[in-house]
Structure formats: structure tokens, C-alpha cells
Image (tube, rainbow, N blue to C red; front, top):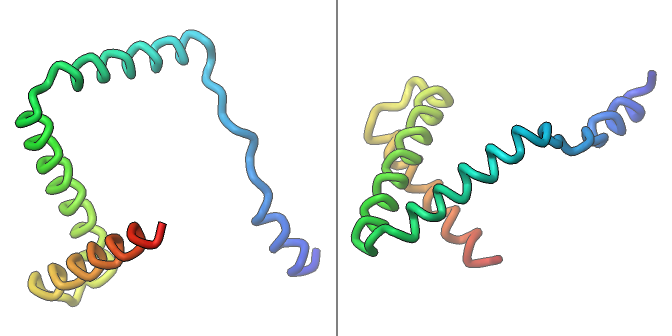
Length: 95
């Protein structure tokens, strides 16, 4: 095979996954339950959960940064995280 053919193979996409009907019903019910719980929350609870989610996402990103830059100290890793957050804001502003 030629390298061009291999590049074309990388562009192929797998067919979308469709779960079995029983699994899909469970997924739908869990989603409806999440919606009911979210609608029942006060604005204060939603704000606190949003902050908790942000802190969790930052901790996952920091773990990735530690893996990508093992030689970086904590201050450098935080600087990288801040750069990524700033980049994300710029990208959001473009869309």
C-alpha cells in the first residue's frame, strides 16, 4: 500500500454507535432524571456545582500537564493551565 492510501484510511469514520433499545431506554431515563434534579436546584446550588465542575476539570487538565511536562514545577504547570484557559476564552470569542 502507498502512503497516500494509508492517509485516506485515517480519514474513514466508523459508523455511529447505536446502543441496544433497552440500553437506550436506560440512558434516556437517566438523562430525564438528571434534568429533573437540575431543574429542582436553586441558582445557588447550580453556581456551586458549576464551580465544583470547573475545579474538577482543572485538576484533570493539571494531571495532563504534569504528564506532558514532568520537569515543570507547580508554578510552571499553573502558568500553562492559565495559558490554556486564556486560549479557550479566545477560541470561544471567535465562535
